[in-house]
Amino acid sequence: MPAPDSDPFLPYVNGLLTTLARAPEKKPIVFGTDRPLPKLTELTNDPGGLAYLAALPATDARLTVESVIGYLVGFARYPAPDDPEIDTLLHAKLAGSDGKLEDVAFRLKVTKHERRWQMVISLE
Image 1 (spheres, helix red, strand yellow):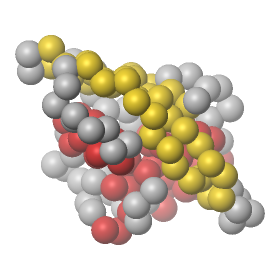
Image 2 (cartoon, helix red, strand yellow):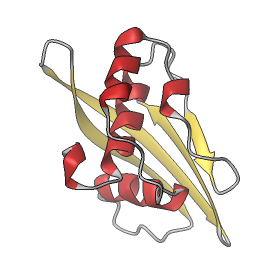
Image 3 (cartoon, rainbow, N blue to C red):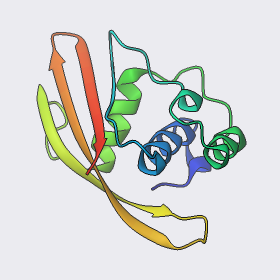
Image 4 (cartoon, rainbow, N blue to C red):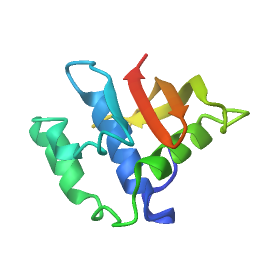
């Protein structure tokens, strides 16, 4: 995943994916134009996960559903990001507490109808 300090929105995106990958329950996360971005601290009750999230920079006030969807689709290198329906995989590396990297994959499903977006992210 990209370095969180290279862009003001990346800490949120990295935090979202890391929290999803480390969650004991592998439930999909859904957000969109009609559903706000999830508060990362509400996605885990693990003390280590909460400490990780607390160490991230504050969420940038300009962060929007559309910007998060754009980042994730861009990271997945989807060839046609303006498609009204996207179903693709985002491959990433997750650093464990021991520093070892683990391969993870996230299923990204995006739908766009008129000006309304929805994304479902799940761990594969």
